Amino acid sequence: MISVASFETPFTCSSVELSPFDERRLAVVTCENFGASGEGQVHILELDAVESTQLNEVVSFTNSSGGLSDCSWSEVNQNQIITASTDGSVSLWDVSGSDDDPLCRWMDHSMAVVSVDWNIIEKTTFLSASLDGTIKLWRPDMFDPLTTFSTNNLPLNNVIWSPHHPEAFATSLVDGCIRLWDTRQANQTVTIAAHNDEALSVDYDKFSEHLIVSAGADRSIRTWDLRFPSAPVNILVGHSYIVKRAKCHPQIPFVIGSVSHDMSVRVWDSKPLPGLTKPEYEANNLPSQNESGIDRPTKPSHQHNDHDAGNINYGGRGDNGGQHLGCVSHGDFATGFDFSLFAAERLATCGWDRKVIVWDINLNYLVDKKKSRSLNSP
Image 1 (cartoon, helix red, strand yellow):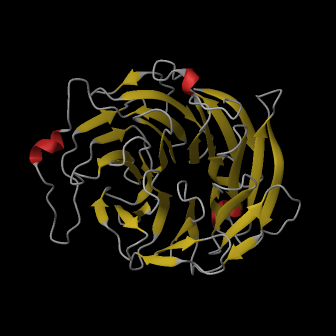
Image 2: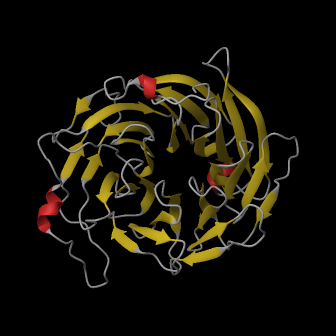
């Protein structure tokens, strides 16, 4: 993995997201005093069109009432982005103007908002998740939320829309569970006890509607088949502290990226082992449930290990055949991760070292670079 460009922010970084419209643009949100107090900022950065190793700031905005914990680009307007704040607010910003104030600020949550996500299919709505145990569905042109979903006071860590169904979304919670939701129903549709500690991150596989990936404070990354949720398909082991974020590659099946408080950035190939034509759990018929009706994980189908935690590792294989594609490090907790929608080899990360870094990884043996999407392509 090669560092292409970097940028240093005044405060510690919380989350980073690459633009779905511009292959050179990204946003990063930050917190003063590690989010415990003070203000937050959103920085819009761009790779220089001539000197691509240069990451320049286009504009920045300050949220004076609290730190910023997450961000998500609009799917209909390339100049708009929403942010989540520790003061319980959600803000919509216009990055094309010079106005320091957001276009709109919603104050419907009673505690810190930890995650926001724009609907990539329906495109006119977005979600916010909070430590107050609620998820709210919004339209940017309406003052009040369309719907509020409750976890019965269980704090949330992450919310993400499905890339396959416009009404489906997933959340990760402090009780270690992943919950699946449908905007047409008031309560969750599926609950998976995914981790032995807090479930910190969840994402949908972009190629199969049945697969999701989760990451937790138990230091593991797990992949799940929603048709058989009693056992994970894979467990990826290698991080030595909590895994803050895990994301599925938008262009290459089975590739997962992750960041951790062990300061490392890792990219994995979670493809099942050669010679296995179908997951072992399919032979066990229907999954078992405990008395509460929550699916509890049993023995995983496959477990991929990386025993070189903290070291740079290219193409190494774990004991059970899991492909570990690369590992690099920040100088402090690594907190944010995102893959590019345009260049298959590109990703961006951020961390408490106040750095935003754009990386390239060698994926030549997994993807034909001609498949990389470009705004300039027909």
